[in-house]
Image (cartoon, rainbow, N blue to C red; front, side):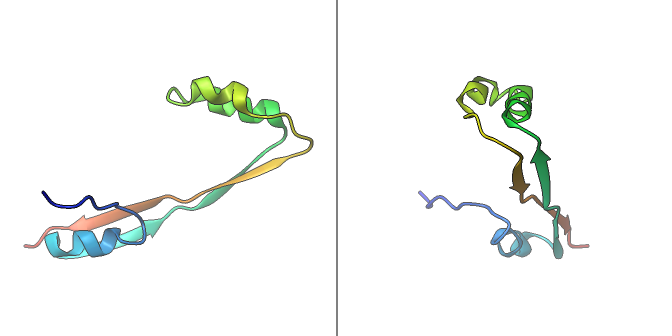
Length: 79
């Protein structure tokens, strides 16, 4: 049995390249600022797979800034 390989933005192009003529990574990183803890809880509740974790968000003062790192790989098959 082959070992498990984790697919990430760092290794995705290398893992896909043997199977495609051209592979390009496009990053879509971003930030969101929540004004308070209630806004964070509302956001967490909006995600079906995370809904039950909304009550675990602690109270805090002020804003919370959260980042996301998303990569999309665009691959072209060989002719």
